[in-house]
Length: 197
Image (cartoon, rainbow, N blue to C red; front, side):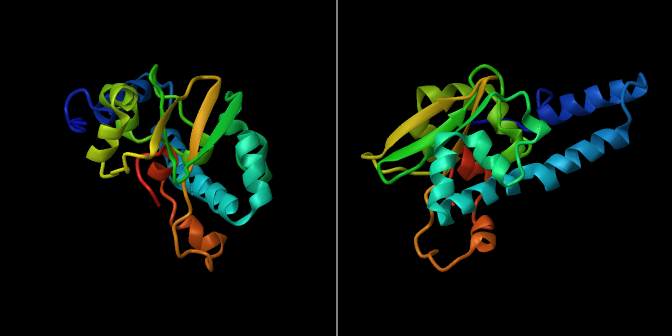
């Protein structure tokens, strides 16, 4: 997947241009935009999702509730507030020895912000969105995740009504770790399905 993050089509350049225009017209304040970005990067960000994953790894009953219906389960941890009130449903798909799940949004970039924070730029790119569906195994290999041929790859297409999140497999040798230590092992990309913790 080749995306030039610094080209004229990069999300960063377009975002900066839009923000500059909105500030010039007096529609937004730059400080307000900065505060919102900081909230998603540091407060909401992928640490929430990592905490959800760590809880699921340590509490089988929570894991069952999470896999049954994601939104009520994440609300138990104080997440999924008004930040994602427009999301009707959060579906969590569990990776196993036999199945690896991958999340994409082929139409735009629907994404569970309440638990994963800001989406990565590559998630919104046409290259990722099309290749995740057409050739997911090859795309994953290019991103550094080589899966055994006997592992089934399932691709989940998020929408405005349904957002998907991956519950990655718990790494071996972590049985003695608590929620805090496990949270530190979980990355945003593992909850999208492009890497393993």
